[in-house]
Length: 425
Image 1 (cartoon, rainbow, N blue to C red):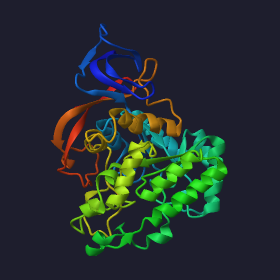
Image 2: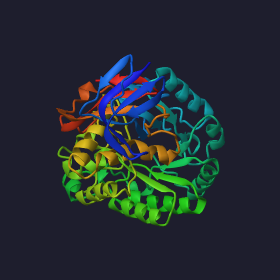
Image 3: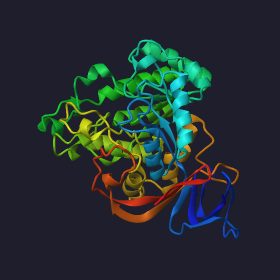
Image 4: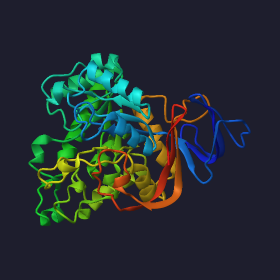
């Protein structure tokens, strides 16, 4: 199918392009990108006033499939991803069974291809069953197609075991996606440890829970040469340590999620509103300001979602019992635009970098680039539409969000994956 996109503002970090152009797509490739293309096409899309960017790439989603399909499936997760402008996602391994072997990897990859709405790359677990006792067969999973490993949902607390995994990752060219949490320091905490949450009567999680493991993981990356990507950073000291690691020339990158740059722990008004329970927790204004500055100054490379759907009945309990996590894949583009781009903190080019070009570079895939000859994965984003987020419109099974009813500006209008329109509003 030929698709001609007319008069969109093409923002492509790979080439530094930021101008109004037409794009012609044929089969699964971009074949022309220039002003005023006059060619026949089965579909002509008027993108006047819209950004045309490389399809977003999420390094951090939970699609819950296999085994936890009451929360999300590869199909519902893919639909939500396409609605959010995502053409590639990386699915964390804490499924049931855990993605610690080639069979589960093959299952996810085959099912995602059948659904055909987004590219799903399964992340391999670091240890068997994510139990932290014995390494998974990382080489077997690499042969099955994984390009990343993670213990997301927890940290590998045995530093020697983790070091061995990093050595394997370095040898195989895999990126390590690190969830940084010293489980021994959590001590039953459910939200950030600060004066506001103490007043609410909630047990706190200190910044050191994250910071101690960030420091350890950076040291192990330096020792092994492994590519380390720090997931869902939430503290000011994480930003400082990433900056220092980069100054030292280490293979260290980092991501921030929208909930961590939009909200603070002060936004928790009801101590039983479990839509504000996520891991890491919402931090203080000082931390949020540091994260925003880190994104602005290109210390923090990536905006990811940590999309974590849960069933209503699982979240509909008290703060202590509810699972950590919120959905995010359908709200991230609007929140990023509203809070960071519209306010002048980030440029539209930086938005495209952090949501597409940089994630592709972090994991070493030939994506995040829409120049001629490249696969046609792209998103058309309308920066002018203002509306209220409505969780009842989500295509994800998960409705667990603290952003329901929040007014935002910017909406995904169309997502094209592999030359096919997979979402249109």
